[in-house]
Image (cartoon, rainbow, N blue to C red; front, side, top):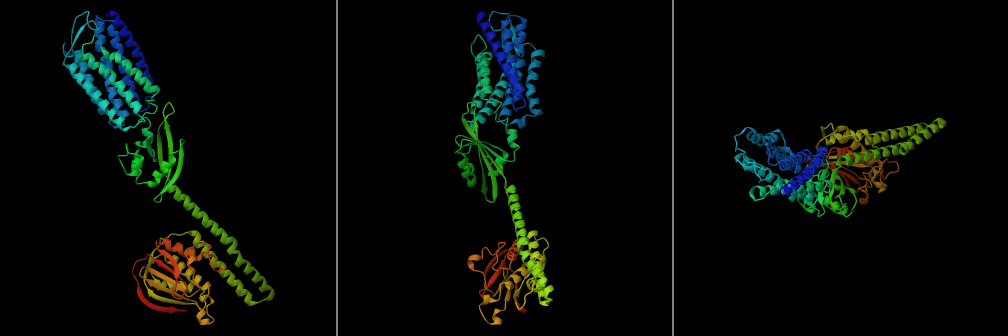
Length: 567
């Protein structure tokens, strides 16, 4: 018996050294969530084994009793450390505050007070020495001990339940870690039950702590317990603005951060198949499936309902380089794309501006220079008139280019009358023999300068494109008639010119498109910009006389019927 106990004691010393080494390893990684609690747990188990080994080696002496009582210096922090570790490991560290630590300290304070200052028999009743028993004394448990036992088992059960619950929802990615932790917890406490309620000559609990040490050693160095602990990275993941999903090899979501839950509008994502979670986002699901076929990190940009997302799929491997899951990251880049498109649009406007300056303005400038030279040579007043017209043309071009380049938004809206706008614009344009006919009137709420610009461009466009397309030899028939109509939803401006072929009506508002050699192709592009800046709609159709008709809608229902003509 004595030889067996000595061998038992030295085995416990070895186990204590292993547990102490693991505690130091965990303490060096205390910056990880759960690292400090795990270090305290392992240190407590190490002290427990040391005290039992020392008590066995000094059995039958008063020192042995001192170690028998002193083992609780290790037991108490081990139990508390286990509970704190389970809270941290399962992402419940929000409960770890001063009140939690204060509650956990109550039982140890009561126990040690009863042990040191209480009456004999409150914790233990001791008799002996004797040749039986591990410590050479007969030790009978008192009521405080049984209360401590119930409290300890309750904390162990709660810790195990938390870890088991987490393990059931974690998938394969962390399951090996969970199994290792549960085995490490279960071994010594199973031994404790056998030692207390069974008939054994030695305590199995300290001995089974060897299994705890071996299991946690594997969890540290092969299962990478603290390196890839689900808690160790969670703070970083939750702080990201990107949606992050951890997916196992069966395409089931193991974890999702707050941004991911907000993106999919589902708080219960964990445990769902990816196909079910992304059911409302078919574009993301399709891209996920296409990227999932690749073993390496892949990335792509997805457009979904006017929103843009940069998505990345990164494989996760365990210590043996086996694929255990993937990280699916979704980052919204809608604002970035909008800025890129706005920059492209601005660059296009600059290109258009440069094109007009380099080409369209050069033509009337050359005309003016040539005519001016002829006028000086011939002293012909008509040549000066042509120079003046060339200058007017340049002025008109400059106004159009500047209006298009500014890309102004409508900010100053006032109440206006359709008829008054049409007449004011008519007076700003050289209309020659053309006639303006106004049928009906209505209120328009908008920017007066921009709307005048709209009417001026449409009128100038109708006049420049000729009278009735040369379809009649009668001068009266060739005269341009421009008609402005008030409609229930807006207004229309039509003419009796050649019109626009149906196949070209969709592109007529594009910059640079003009059926006239002298046109800039900016007039109707400016018209479209003015209409869109007011939030209205515009389209090109055919007038009753076969000419062009510009229809502006979206203003609302309000019009007055009356007719008048202006020449």
